Image (cartoon, rainbow, N blue to C red; front, side, top):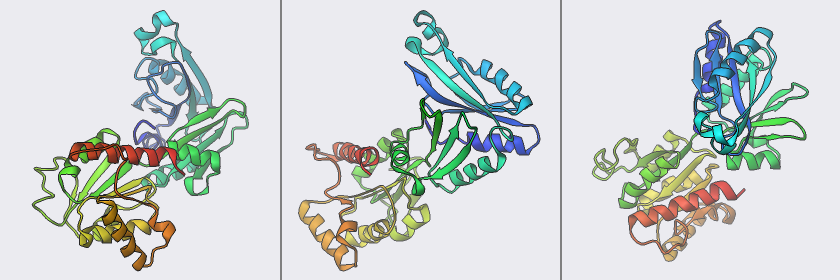
Length: 327
């Protein structure tokens, strides 16, 4: 998904209210398309809409088809494309083409399945919606139970359509989160970068003077002890933890919580010597060599970064590499 929009929840709410609902999903694109595969539009039985499948250029036609599909309960596949000379006028640049799957809730899309999907999203459980367009089968697969191909899709956050099997996989990952322990200068550069990259950032530091609204505007600030704070926020497979305090009394409690979780990234500031001492402390705390190896230290890609902003860039680059390229 482009971002974690509540489109399935809105469709379920419209259905449960008795007015009916349809979900339209981009399942395939060619050329340059304004919305990526997996983008969704919900249409109510009264013609209300939430979300988008094209940025506005084909929504009108989709709504008409959706209301007709609501009457018969069957799914529909729609394809929209334009010639190069007309492309920019309707928003499908360079002759782009999109295919859209239209599914009435309570018809082609079972209500109980949509309800389970919405609960999985609410609980931050990475879940894939798998639809066989020939057999009509719909099912959910959680990331924890995914095969290799699906696991790759979860990691890349990439929905897709297999032309040969005619199976669409819609990946519903929760929003990415970044927890920064240590409200230092690097954090002031890292937090806005992370927000631009699609993360929900949190800053943890019991020192009120450091973790202040003036230094971190529009950012959730937690002044509890770090291990309590990270548990309060939550640690899961879509969360990254970055430790920046240089103080073991602050870093280590959060680090131990992260090593017991399945966060996708753990980074810790400090020299090679500092990191060696950190590894020794974790070993003494009972963690295995495999667990300790999850810690990226010194934090960030080795790009010769100098100063807080460049170090923040190196951290964001390494987080992205781990998220998108590693299993």
